[in-house]
Image 1 (tube, rainbow, N blue to C red):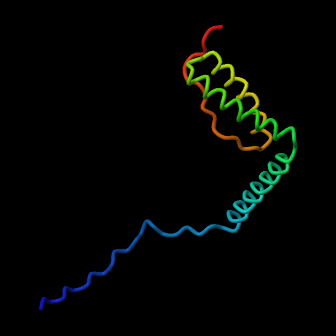
Image 2 (image 1 turned 90 degrees about the vertical axis):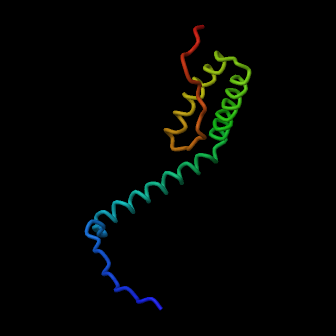
Length: 112
């Protein structure tokens, strides 16, 4: 049988001490969570409106149109749809709604 080696003492962890949050930090985090819940509630309430539902459907239709225009190679139409989606998307995100990420065209805008 082999001899057992002497156990080494574990190295102390000097730099990885746990930082305890102060009550003020905990309160600030909880208030941020409350704000998030309130904005989600407002967005959910807004989605009940027929006008907002139609606006979201229009954004989705613009996304599909941009995909089809890109497949066809029609860059002027792709940029025109992207411009209109940008305006509508900015309004809806400003109101607190989350929209799917847009696949905007890259490169220069073609001349008219």
